[in-house]
Image 1 (tube, rainbow, N blue to C red):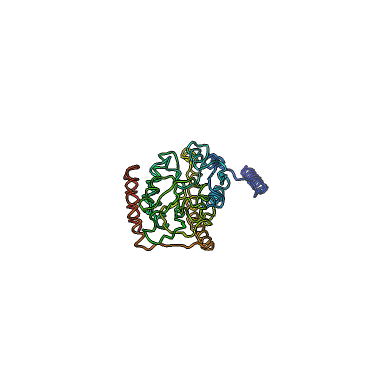
Image 2 (cartoon, rainbow, N blue to C red):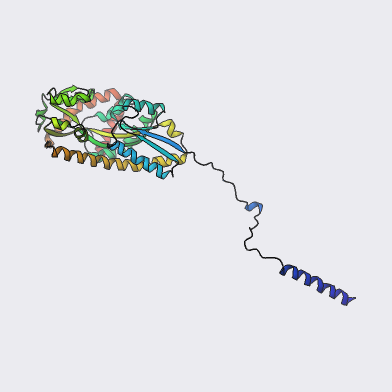
Length: 354
């Protein structure tokens, strides 16, 4: 009986060993995963593609337009193509006022322009009409990207805009058929200006005769001697060939051009966090690009004026100080119109930056 039980035990053990040795190997078999190891399904929805526009009245070769194309390149690359940007230069979608209104209404995402046309929509931007306040591009760059710049951004937001970029671009300078080398030489000169009460008050304080005139009529007015002088950046003077009717460039640097790109705030706020981050980062780089491009184009234009035979006049420091003194009453005008906050903040920021 014991022998029989031993034989049965040997048989069972042998069968088990054969079963184990004959189980097929499968190195490619998908491993079994317990319920606690089951991969989680992706829960975040893909970012929806977005199309934005940047429009401007300036030509496609202007610093603002060149920068807009650079911003387009940066945004599309950084977003992996999930944001598409269409750029419309040459007033294709309207002049400055139409573009501002369209951006404010949200039918246009962004517009690029200087601060001057925005004063009708944001009166506080008249702070940039303070003559001979901002006279150095590097200092101005620091000022508009510091605490003062934060105050300016808030004014834009209050009006329904998101300020994406603000860059010191160039200066308004005087071109003339009358030689000006000292403060007294401004006296009696008929100079075409914008129809801007602050600009006109400034020239009056210098002793000149400011004459508002449509820009399209300026070349003929200079040619016919109706005015003897005008004031614009180098690039404008060269692009419109005003230099053909002028003998001198006087580096008054009395009003700084600030190039801006503004976006409809509701459109910006409605973007995903990812898209906001992409656009913000792109405009940081675009701002640096714009600063360099403005300086480059200004240098090219100045050389063109020299090549055309115009004499370039830099006023002595003591004469320029007289101009700055004559400008101070205009600061008070602006302060009365927009309040003291921004005027005082700008003067303080300039003092600290210098």
